Image (cartoon, rainbow, N blue to C red; front, top):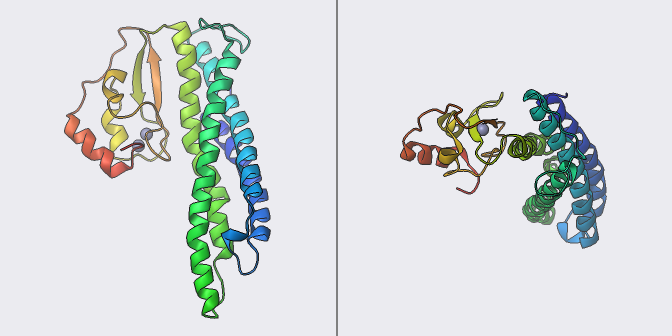
Length: 251
Ligand SMILES: [Zn+2]
Ligand SMILES: [Zn+2]
C-alpha cells in the first residue's frame, strides 16, 4: 500500500505537469504587454475542465487506497467493486465524492488565477504606461500555475481524500456508531489542530466538518469501534481563538 507521502507526491506531480502546460499557454495568450483581458474565456473553460479531470483521477486513487488500507488494518478485505449498504459499489461511491470535490478544486484554481492576474494586469498596465520594464511576468504566472501551488493543493486535498476513503469504508465495517478521533498528521502544526487532537467527532465537528482544517493541514481521523477512548475536550473559547489565528476554513 502506498504511503500518504507517496500519494501526495503523485498528486502534486500530476497536477504540476498539467499546470506547467497551462502556464505556457497562458503566457502566450496574455500577449505583450500582458493583460488578462486578452485571454479568451475558452482557455479558462478548458483549464477548468482539464484540472477537474486530473484532480478527480488523483482523488479517486487516494480515496480507494485509503479505504482498502483501512479495511486491511481491521483484518477485513473490501474490493472496489463490492456493493455497499447504500447499493452503490465502493468505487461508484468514491467516484461521486472525487468528482464533486474535483469540481470545487478546479473552480477554486480558476477563481484564484483570475483574481491574481487581474491584480497583475493592473500593475503591468501601469508600468507599461510609465515606460518601465515588466520584470515579474514569469513569477506572477508561476504563482498561478506553478509547482508550489500544485503542491499546496495536493497536500490539502490528499488530507480530505484520505478522510473520505477511510470514512466510507469505516461506516461499512464498523457502522454509524463508530468513534472518530482527530489525530495530528506528520506536518507542521497550527494553533488549532493540536487543541482538537484526541477529541471525538461530537467535539471537533462543532468547529470543522472534517480534515483538512485549513490549507496545508495534514491531520487525519482515526475510526474506531464504540468505546474507543477520546481525550477530554479543551475550553471552547480557546479553540475559537485558535481558529482565528490559524486560518481555519469557514471561520
Ligand atoms: Zn492545523
Ligand atoms: Zn491539521
